[in-house]
Length: 406
Image 1: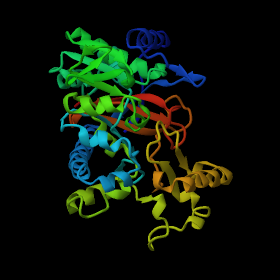
Image 2 (image 1 turned 30 degrees about the vertical axis):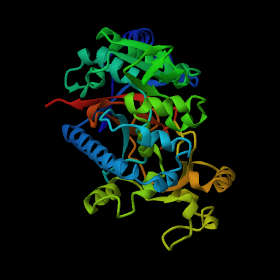
Image 3 (image 1 turned 60 degrees about the horizontal axis):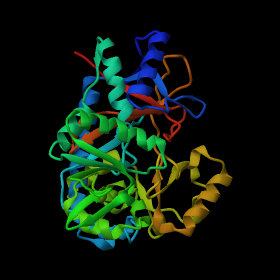
Image 4 (image 1 turned 30 degrees about the horizontal axis):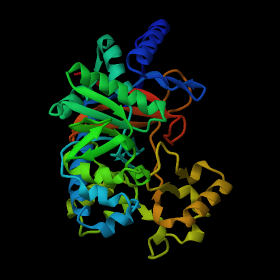
């Protein structure tokens, strides 16, 4: 895995970014005072590509079985930190194969791929993941984009004539994701409606948005926020007959506390547990610290902060991730105090090192996260990011992902 600059002049780069803004709705190419899309690509060897696809599809298969088991165990769902008002919605849904996930892989110095959390609820990145391959791909020679997110989503949603796009309407960055997928579907003849989940009604057994019947919904509204909706009763009626991309039950996989729960040998066979141990960090539920000889006591965490990462079960874009080695002692102490107030909502993960890549523009080292999309449990493309420190959040750069051609 290396970084390689785009084969474009400065003028050609500007044209590409302009097209990305206006034709693919990527309005925040420039944000946080800088450009967040690098004119640089991660280049994988064919074997690295095969490994990434195999690992993520294996994760997807394991999580599907785990999700099915946990839906029969409401007591364990509560241990995931899922809000009690949301659990009845998860169990009300009918089984469906619809899935849009992104798993972020980190390469360690010993060449292992590690996954520290799953983006199974409302993963994003569609604008760049399709726009840049469209615009840059024809100019490449010894490398190529693999996967086709647009085609995979169109195939998955083909059976549904009228699709509602349900998102947090106060966020323009969410709207840009909805608009680009909506454009693809309407070009294929689908009828679409943009709305909030609060606009759903369900009478005479028919889910409706603004009074119009809908056959499916593309959900870009975090499932844990459904506890705040005033129309939860309508959702209870609609869920058995409204397929969602993604189903609300994907919240099970989204919870970071799942990493501690799956250690229960009654949930998974040994071969699955061995795979998870190889590719995920040790994770401890914060509310069980010091209960055995393998977990630290609360008072030991101050001295061991460089070893641990503190995470909320349902943080987004790194907003509730605190890496002990990257923050001062005062911030780490404050974060532990916050977790003490609701210990059942937090976990500790053992920190692992990430293999950095040299910046081809002679800038600081970049720490990459290789993002792999799955649609209906199969590989559908890449959406990768990188940062100048080993922590990926909303300020990280988007970096295109290519595979060497034979």
